[in-house]
Length: 92
Image (cartoon, rainbow, N blue to C red; front, side, top):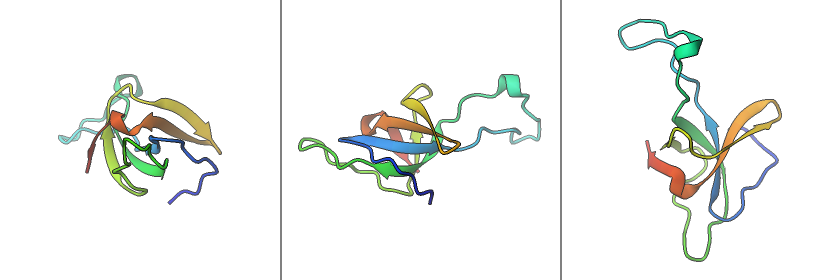
């Protein structure tokens, strides 16, 4: 687990996106210009939640999120996404 010096507030979640696919299942390599944004990532930090909404994801979960969800951050040379828990579609 990566230790980061950031603590999300309320119902926010910090996610480290997984690398985009470079090869299809049939073995065809995807060029950089055709790669899509990853929609899967690992939860790095979670906020405490709100009195109305409890946080259901936990640190270390692998999640699916919307293609354009969250705000991109760069911390300590790594890319992260900060988003509300409601933007997360599923835990896998």
